[in-house]
Length: 133
Image 1 (cartoon, rainbow, N blue to C red):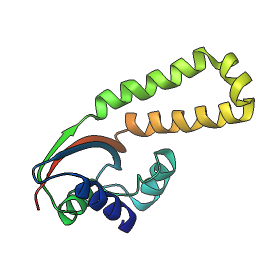
Image 2 (image 1 turned 120 degrees about the vertical axis):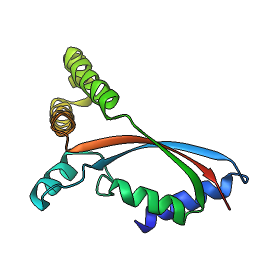
Image 3 (image 1 turned 135 degrees about the vertical axis):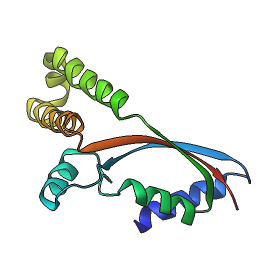
Image 4 (image 1 turned 90 degrees about the vertical axis):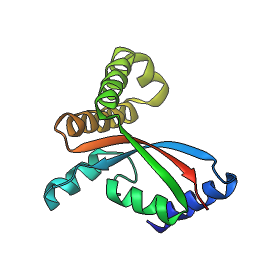
């Protein structure tokens, strides 16, 4: 969490007072058991271990105000499925470039991510914040 706070503070220093920044993030859905939480962290992107409420706290600690959040989970699921299907469609060409084992590993990760989003275990939001101090 310290590394994320450092990055957010650095972003804030680049902005003048009232300047805005927007970013997307994935986080585990609330209310998961410890076992399910560990599984979905493995299924998601790096940094998935940060909960949504922690993003709010981190942003406030970094000096950002006027927090706006938009849930884009449904749209992200469509995009994630599109990546998976598109890479499968061009699998032969991608295997030639990436190698068969790397292509297979990436597809496994994408399938796990699509599964976790479909099951409501992973959420994705767009955060828009303003430098407040």
